[in-house]
Length: 187
Image (cartoon, rainbow, N blue to C red; front, side, top):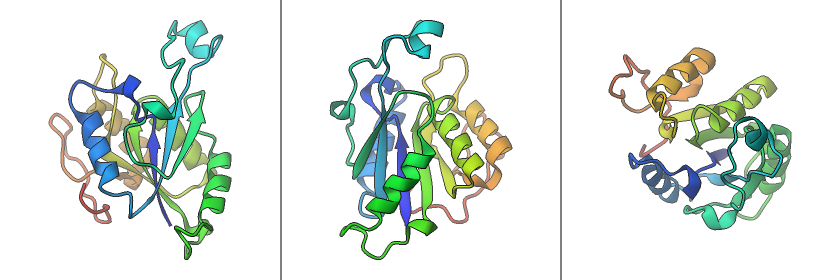
């Protein structure tokens, strides 16, 4: 079973380079191939984000901030998604009428979204530590950070996750890039 895990692709994290829209187009053109599970980040008063970063964005976010087609939406209040909850939820969803012949024990997650250097990275580390099968879709991950670019974060992905990183094409200023033998269609 293939799960497209879309991390925090919401209005508040829209970039100025058009990657947000590119990601939405990709998701909407692949909803029949994957179980699309999205996350929406919701900040809370008194959170670590407000206390230590002075950031009070995303206080009133929810499903209304999602602009793509999804099968299920999970709310999270920290950097990483609960992978234990995700595994349990996917096991239940795998038995649904929409995916009648899927085996939840053979799930492969395809991760995309924002922010590459925060929530996507934190979720990937949690999945790695739990031994979950996943691929990071580098062409559909971006950061809104101004101090560095997405390409810098992809280098960190390659160092930490090796062939779990899939990239269709080399990016400018990224160096050699890795070809994607088993890349999903139409990236």
